[in-house]
Image 1 (cartoon, rainbow, N blue to C red):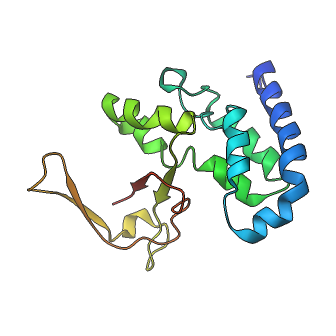
Image 2: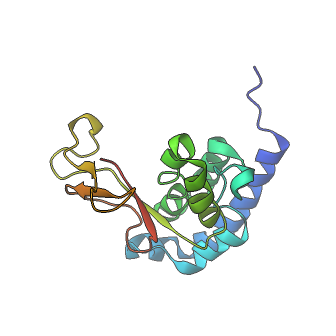
Length: 172
């Protein structure tokens, strides 16, 4: 088994390292203390094609996979945890869609995350149980009044990316 990084992954790591040193390092303290997701950093990630690292090429991503995303997150979080979360939010909400979404859902949601035209958020944690999926209280039931619709009942907390999100993945 070969544990060496491919030339493509090494190039990705090096390009993200350069971006992080130029754009994130000088402002790291400001970024992390504000708790906001800076638009200019999001745009830098978009321009560097970093928003679709885990998204397959057929849906507009680079197909670099979880290892590519991990390398990118590792480089940016050397300076700022917030910027690492910004990249992670390209995977957490899209993972369930990639794993079990319909083709229609994949075509609707994945390309817009990869190209940066939409942002998503991830709702898992609940006030009484944190991220214990087995103890989750939120429920989704079919909406009898809306074809294909669902009714969500429950409470989520610590929804990562909620302020910027155009859509949400909510665990129920």
